[in-house]
Length: 299
Image (tube, rainbow, N blue to C red; front, side, top):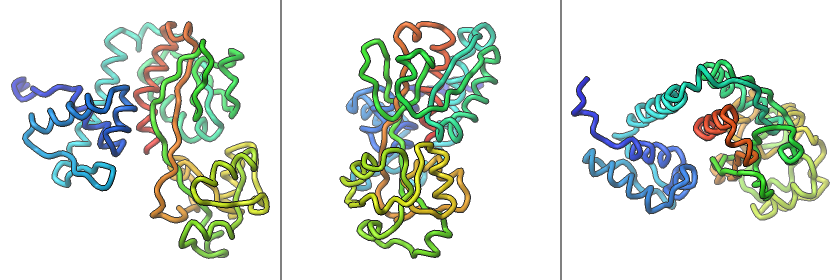
C-alpha cells in the first residue's frame, strides 16, 4: 500500500460526490447537513489539492467537467466502503438485533425500500425489518412504526425529522396513451389530456397549478388513493400522472411527457421518535437510511 498517495481528506471527497449527485452546492449542503460556504470550501480545497477543475457552472447548477467524470465511480465506492466501515467499527453487524418497523408510502415501500433492506440485512444480519406500507403521516405518533419516510416534515415536538434528499418527479404516461392521444409539445397542452389522480383530486389540482397547469376535475377520469394502483392505471394508458423518476424507471411501457421540462422537486424526510433515536438498532437503521436512501432515490 502506497500510503503517501492517500493524502486527501474524505470529507472533501464526500463534498465532491454530494455536489455531483445533487447538481448544486446548495442542494448538496442540505443533503450533508452543512452550510453552503462550508461545502464550497471543501470542494474548492479538493480541486486545489488535486490540481484540477471538477465542476463548471451551467445556469444555476453545476456539472462535472468531462475529464473528471471517472472520479464519480471511485467516490461512490469510497462512500459504500465508509458506510460499511461505520457499521462494522462498532460491532453493529454482529451485535445489534431486533425488530425495526419502517413506514413509507406504498410506492416507496415497493420500488425503493426492498434493495436497501437487502443490503442492510447483509450488513446487520440480526436486524429484523417490518415495512409498513401506508400513506398516512400519523404512524409514528400512534407508535405504529419506528422510522417514517415521508414527503412532509412532521412538526410534532417529540419527533426528530431529517431532510435527507430532494427527489425528482416528472409527468409520465403510457406509450399507448400518447400514441392514441398525441405527444405533448408544451405544458399548456396538458390541460386537454386525461390525468390519473393520486388521492384527493382537489388537493392535486392545487399542487399542480403553480407549475402552470390549470386542470379541473373533468381531467381526472381515473385514480386511486393507493399509489401503486394509480401508477398501474397510468401504465394501462388511462392518463398522464406525475411520478417520481425512480418509480417510473421501474415501470415498463411508460415514457416521460415533456422531457425538457424542469423536474418537480419534492423533499424526502426521515423521521423517528426522540427516545427511539437512542435505541441502538433503530439508530443503526436510521443512519443506514440516511446514508443510502438519497442514492436509491436517484437511481
